[in-house]
Image (tube, rainbow, N blue to C red; front, side):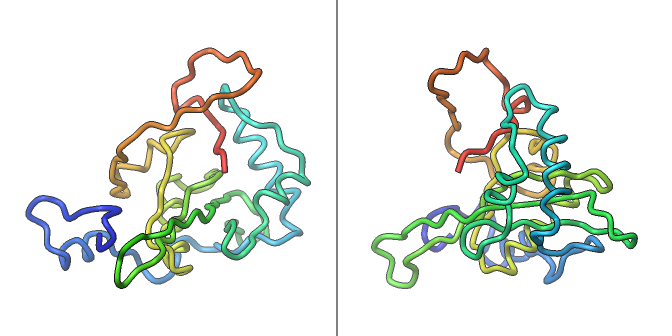
Length: 190
């Protein structure tokens, strides 16, 4: 709000806004942990299987999943939910896309987390994404953005995401694609 990325709502004070958007200090789902290299085969299976639901989606190898999703500080963050048997059935991820803040006396950067690929098999997607918000806050992100692609529409309103001021348009060179609604797109470009 201080840098103009967002604004106070009608009849809202800063204190009320902070209270409305406050998230807990720790994830709410049991078994959440950072993805490790040993998790790549299972995460590859989960993400690849999930993406096949969508008309437009990438087909990724295990090496590509490792490259694009294995956590790297200040680049990409990926978490898995491991049950008591050691099985991984849920994945959430986000990437860092900071913005420079110009002409502000106190702030020079806005740390923005962008939702990436998220697979919720044993919990509702909304609950998994709530934990993603908490995990991003733990890593000192200022905002969390999510496109209305894949199944993201199912949690945006309930988790109090504000509607952005534009539409994301993909232009795919040398591809012939029909018009696809956002819920049919399983692609997030970095």
